[in-house]
Length: 511
Figure 1 (cartoon, one colour):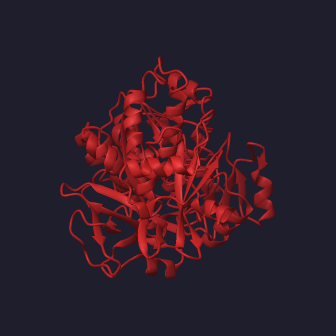
Figure 2 (cartoon, rainbow, N blue to C red):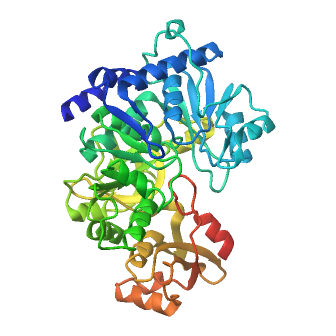
């Protein structure tokens, strides 16, 4: 199976990958909806996507037409996206939780000629918003999709290196950036995930995050390469979603660090019963993973945990594998696949040796082509064509990547650099800490002071700053890195995709 998957990964376009998988296992299921259990097989997925492509063609969509869509995680969303891939259109997925400001920006910047929306979804009228924004070619694509005769279609695209995808960065402190991807960059990213996880036809995956996220095609490529299904969660909340995981026998779950923590919290309500009986692996990425969280998952959930490193610009950079050592799985982000170059440099771009912290720079097929804004593209790539990620870390002697923070997440206190992640990893080991974020706040005497913001589990005794600092001292943290301010919150602010902590909101609140 692995050899077949690696051969399929050479497909030049996403549509060819769909066709080749449909020919191999047409009757095998690929998508199962958690609510209601609707399902579709690989053969039907191909046939319906092509009929939808013909329906879109009848509406005037052609190769190169820019089509934006803002749709929840369900079968019709995947069908529409694949139909656009069959046409060779340029598609711009928009996270369904975004509202007027972000959606209007994405529509203007991408020059979308058509916009697919779900109508009224979860109490919000997306069609009305689209009209309010003056979006062109608005059509609803929730329960039904336009269909037509595939005989009208031009040949499918043969070139997988043309830009056909515009994804949007989160834009937490400014307008989002439109990230340019090709079929081949998405296939390369998904292949990294697929080969590392070593899954097979008997596995059942899960997509509990918005399919409009860069992780959507990442995961779909894995399903197409290895021929197993995934359960789609249109709405993810625990404990309500547990029935879907159990009923459909999910073996692989996850999404990001926040998802691991949520599963753990549910398991702790009844430690005597395995939360999801069929679950054997949690996997994800998109946010830092404290080592203690790895050990807690393995110990309490009774399954493996593999974590990776990716971003909108590069959907998969490194990924842990189930056969990695516990030390590697707990303390690193895994290894890069063949074809992904990782260079660790100083601030001027000079390469640094293994074990030395520096800027993480990337070059390879999975790296985006740049941004819609040419100036942003010029600033993001160095003279050797490496993407400057803004992340800090080092490579181990055996090729594993260790992330130590972000260049913008370094606290400078009295001229000394302090890694927020180092302190956060230690705080996750402290009883009474559910989650933690460490930020730097302006200080007239120190430049910045260290502030720990802690989310505690329900019913936990409130922590005090002396308790926190005494614990960190006992763990060997240098005195100059100790928090000088502690804030307790009911919940850390997070985004709606992979539930990353929004530190800028914490800085605004506590500055």
